[in-house]
Image 1 (cartoon, rainbow, N blue to C red):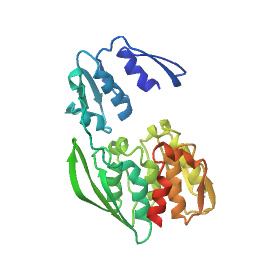
Image 2 (image 1 turned 30 degrees about the vertical axis):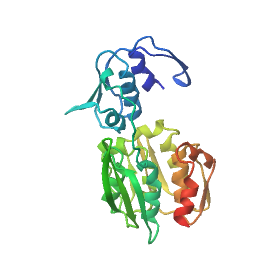
Image 3 (image 1 turned 90 degrees about the vertical axis):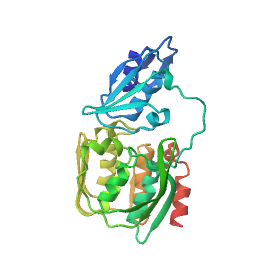
Image 4 (image 1 turned 180 degrees about the vertical axis):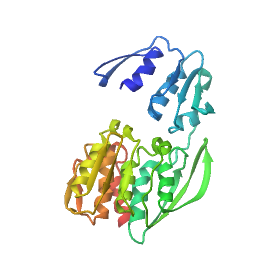
Length: 303
């Protein structure tokens, strides 16, 4: 938790914890003060925590991010963002405190990723996912899939509250693996697990680097992915900031381990379907964290 508590402590917040991990005891802050803060990593969560604290400060808080991360908080609050060679600087103060209003929240493009990849890899398939958020900092995985050869169309595109949304129309496609540039990693970090499934069925070997943040999610996702891909008999190499795999699937009837991580569980549920129900996933209830209706949605799609 120190990545979040360090900047907030600089602003006047007070916390207690053991080894900087949950559970976290939070004390009322007498007064918060503005800071100039440079994000140590590209993280929308850290950035948003400082932004929300900055709404309660007298004076301007500035946040510098060297690589852009997801920007829903800035858009919702209408914050000033200054762009330069060193990155984006977000400015926030009390004047940005929002007034009560109605907000339209598009369908979650990250949750859609599992159904997008399933449709791309299943034979003779297509799907329309309506009113999906198409924020540039969220749809990076769609850009990567298109570069891999995916047939993806955007229809009925509109804007509400500064956020772009529209219908995703997906068709079965033959994919080819490619190098994933470092600068897009922060904007696909949550979708890397399901992107790796696309890579498994694409032409060529799959490899990803510069993704060390995966180790700091609900599980160590690099280790979790490598563990499960090894169950299939693939040749897997694990790096500190990524992984790669090659070879043919030798084992299909395997029990994948979810590591109590919703994205790992959904990733290998999709893979199990693509293996003609050749695999199962343990502790699948953890998907309820982000999508409790996942199984019903799968049943609707697959019939």
